[in-house]
Amino acid sequence: MARSLMIANPYDNDCLNMIANYEKSNNLDDTITKQLIRIRAVTEESTYERRNMTSNEINQFIFLRDGNKLVAGCHFQGYRDMRDSYLSILPSTSSRMTANLLQYVTTYAFEGLGMEQVFVEIDNHDEKTATALIDANFESLGPDGKKTQFMIEKGNYVMMEGLQNGNSKKH
Image (cartoon, rainbow, N blue to C red; front, top):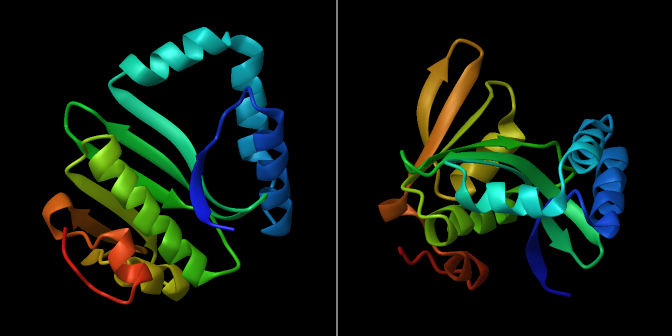
């Protein structure tokens, strides 16, 4: 089955169940699920959707879905006015799936949301995620204390199809 992105929807029970399973299989607490349930409890769905479309700030949990299973995820925070976005990569059992997620999310950020830059900050010792970022054509901006920041600009990203076909064609 083809992989696709899934943006967490607090009003979709199937989505919440998949996220709960992802959290469990990756030894995460249920923070994401609780956060989404809290949103659903205090915000009407129409208000939530309107805010997502009109707010300057974009705040989403995004997952790579393979059939009915989530295989990688991240927290996405973007700013429409500055056209910058920031990813926090969630733990995953596969660096290959994390690299795939990064390609999909980068394409979504640039083509779907009009972002110009995507930043990711990771712990210096997280070699698995660093490899996935480099595989997804992110550039290391170097260490800063215990963290290393990576960035990709819209003009330098490799299209997802290129990686899937073994090519490295620039967009």
